[in-house]
Image (cartoon, rainbow, N blue to C red; front, side):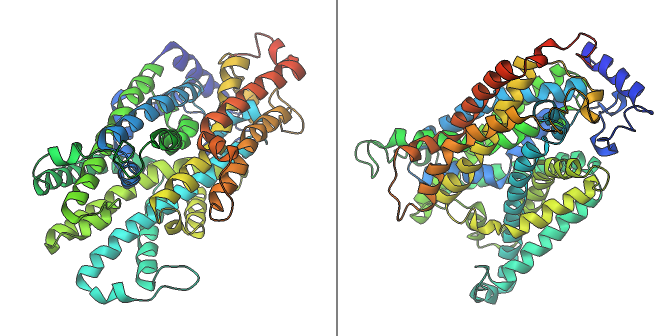
Length: 510
């Protein structure tokens, strides 16, 4: 264990009774991790990221770019660059989790205030609920496709007017949802074991799909040599850059969620080296490898079926052998379950605990995540690739980019990585600001988000509102919101809150 981690762990254990336990804003679920709880090494983080990357939305992220006109190499290049970019804020935010053993909402308290931390926590929680719903829909959709093999009449059932899906689809969604809720009730310790099962399972399924695609298309040649639709002779000639930058932003937005709440995981790391090395290997490697499968299989569907199929569940449903079909879709269900719990429950659950630390437990927070995930009607978010890109991934990247800009600027430029651990849990400490809120953090996050709103409206109502300069700004949402929020926060804190820079040495560090 690193020197920092040892020192902080010893202080954690010294604070557990009675000082920190009796603090106004303490709960067992938000407590700093102790040295005994720090069991994750580099291997665990590599497995975590490969497991998270090996999921259906990753496949769809890659396949949607193929369907929108990119060549295989253009899509893979975009994914690689995006994940190298998002790796930077991810590692920067992870540092605090490992050094102080604190979760994401507690980390937010230093910049936003003890109560103001609920603002970025709720933004991240709502996005997490959305992703939970999407993954629950994918798992339910796979169950539905399994059942239609045995009950073909299900596919002819009319849709429920207010929902847009038919009763069997709703039934399968609820079944998969209840399975998720059962796992959540087992607690956070179950996640690591599920991930260890899921990672090889979905990788085997992905490799099997890859081999099928290469065999059915008679080699890699027809798949990887398929020309881009953005070059001369293509249907979208000359439009490459106008699609590349929104695609890059969408890919960054894909993991902008965990780039914020990564302290929820890095707090269990033995050393800074373990979390940094594991994530630097696991994230780019996992995303590129599984995206490669999505790219190749989607290209194969063009060769085999004459049109690109971006949904792997639809691709699997075209297999005629019932045994292979059922086995493949069951694997999708298990893998989706593991990804959903690890990526989309841990952070929202912690965020809901932060709202009411004395009343809400991790399990209760998990149930709230699941309920909200259903209420957003996730099937509408991924009904087609354009909406998935422009109305979901890019849209929420503006929210999380602004929050990330404030957090990173505060931790590195204002605090110089030094936090007062006890004050993160008590009223009237240095992070209480004005009635628990830091107004300059709120000003910064609003300033970062505002320029992206007009473009979002233009995209939503594109059939009636022509695109303008604001649409172009919106295509760079994560970069715009991150940059503006960072500059505004540093400027206002420097100009109006100089006491932050005059903390005494005994108040810094811990």
